[in-house]
Image 1 (spheres, rainbow, N blue to C red):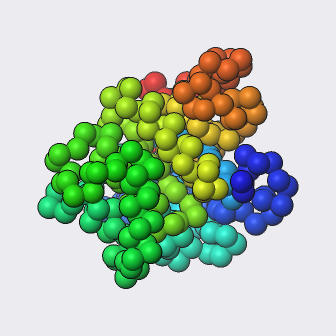
Image 2 (image 1 turned 90 degrees about the vertical axis):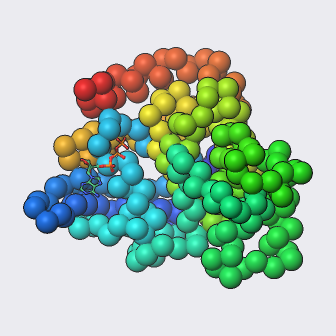
Length: 270
Ligand SMILES: Nc1ncnc2c1ncn2[C@@H]1O[C@H](COP(=O)(O)OP(=O)(O)OP(=O)(O)O)[C@@H](O)[C@H]1O
C-alpha cells in the first residue's frame, strides 16, 4: 500500500497537496471580507486529513481553492508540486448532497465524470461496474436515483468520484445528511476503499468522532479570519483500526476531549 498509513518516509517528499501561506478574500459589490489567512499545511500522498472547526472558519473555502474553483488572494496551492490554476482531473470533489441526475440511470450517473472527460470506453465502463459492485450496488445499475436509499445514492456519488481515478479526494461533509447507522457504515466503506487504493483525502466534517476514526491527522481551524489553531496526529492504534472499531480503542476518548477543548476555544459552540 502506498501512503502515510504505510509510514514510508519517501511518501512525504513531494506532498500531494501543499498550501503555502494561503489567504482568501471574498469580494462582493459592497465589501471585501477576509475568509482565511496564512493557511499553511501539506498532505502527503495516501494521507487522510480532516479539517474541523466552527461554522464560517473557511473549511469549504480551503477545499475550493485546492479544487481550483477559487484562487487565493495571496500564497499558493500546489498539487503534486505544481501550482493549481483550475480544476484538475487529479482531484475528485464529493459533497454532502449527492447531485445525481434523476433522469439518468445509476450506471449513467456513475459514468458522468468519465463522460465529461470523453473517457468512456469498454474498459472504463467495466471498471465503473466493478466499483459499483464493490460498493454493494450490483444489480442496481439500471435503476434511477429515486429508487435508492440516501446511503446508496451517496455510494453512487462516491463511485462517480472514483471512476475518473483521481489521486486526491475532497470530501465536504459527505456523511452529514445520512442517518447514524448508514453514516457509520459508509465511513467504514469510504475509509477502506480509499486506503486500499492509496488515495489521498481531505475531509471536512462537524463530527469530531468521525474525524478521529477515519483520519491520520486532524487540523483544527479557528475563525475571524480562518486560521490553523492546532494539528493533531492520530495514534497508530486508532489509525489502524477499522473506523467503526477505532472508537473503542484506548486513548480515543482522551483524544476526543483534547481536540474538543481546542474546538471549544475556537468558538465552535458560539
Ligand atoms: N461566496 C461568498 N461570498 C462572500 N463570503 C463568503 C462566501 N462564501 C463564504 N463566505 C464567507 O467566508 C467565510 C468562510 O466560509 P466557509 O463556507 O468556507 O466556512 P466553513 O468553515 O466551510 O463553514 P460551515 O462549517 O458553516 O460550512 C465565512 O465568513 C463565510 O461567510
